Image 1 (cartoon, rainbow, N blue to C red):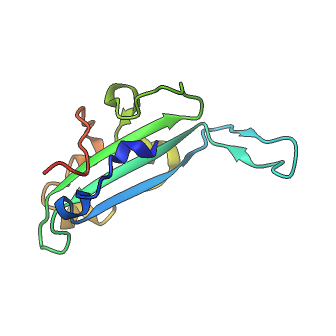
Image 2 (image 1 turned 90 degrees about the vertical axis):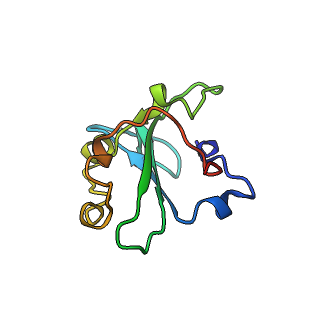
Image 3 (image 1 turned 135 degrees about the vertical axis):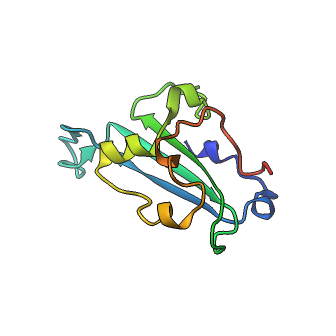
Length: 130
């Protein structure tokens, strides 16, 4: 999953502010580990990852780019995690599945934020792009 980030040594000079938010999606009735010391722990049905690239975070109206992914618990070992058709989703969908509200302040603070949470971006961008 983390190879989605495509980090290299020059990434930090090209991207000033990258936020990566990851977590589990349990679903309505998650499986539970039934044996061993881990007994009783819920097993997520999938995981989410949200990447937000905020240009000049501390300016009055910065621009943003956002990508959201959902990865199922069971996945092919040779899956291409950057495949937006297979794993791409929206922040709105992740919020619906988790009950969380990820960016409540962004709508008033970031110029191009309205609509970002419902946008399904088809192209994967990397941390090394300009």
